[in-house]
Image (tube, rainbow, N blue to C red; front, side, top):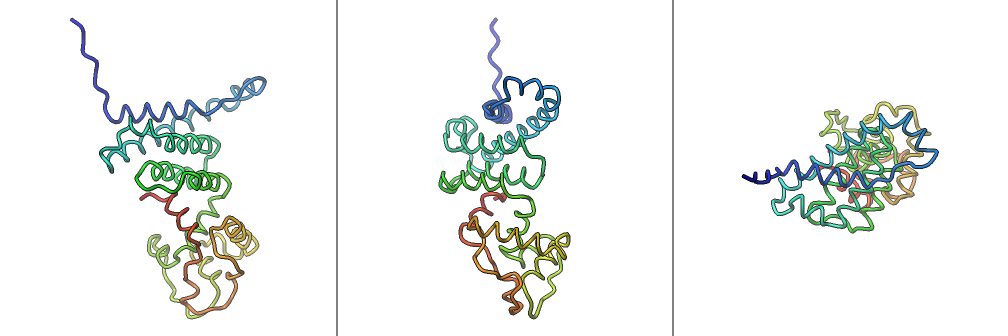
Length: 229
């Protein structure tokens, strides 16, 4: 008697989709292959397995949010597969948790309804790759300092007057006294169109101005793309 094929669970299918995407990431070849296998193969496999699990979790979460977005349909969505592949390549060469979380959220938001335009998604993935975790933190603080403090349990000092730099150093203590570093971070974010132009950090203003949002519309879209919905 022939056995009926076992029906795969959504989790099984999700994991297969993730494995298929990761398998498309190019591997080293030629002389590099020997060096790669001797020194990096094991760590890379760990990263690959961890990211594979992230992709599988994303696919399951998408189906949980939107029932008709099954793993099979996602696997046929060319735009989603492109984002997942690009994010996978970036993930395998990174270890910083903030960037890996941003990549995971980017894949999730690319799969859900009403994602950013396809070209902008590619730009945003490039930014995740190029920017440091400090860039992402500074951008998040300057988007809405009041909400950021509330989310992270940081006291709002209710400043009467001063510069936004005082708020930034209060929210991110590791940057205190590091003006040269965070000034450069802000210039980088401005050059990518994520923050408004001008040297606002050290300009004295009212308390309301100190905690005002400094992100552009593009910056806000980027933050939404890399944040869990």
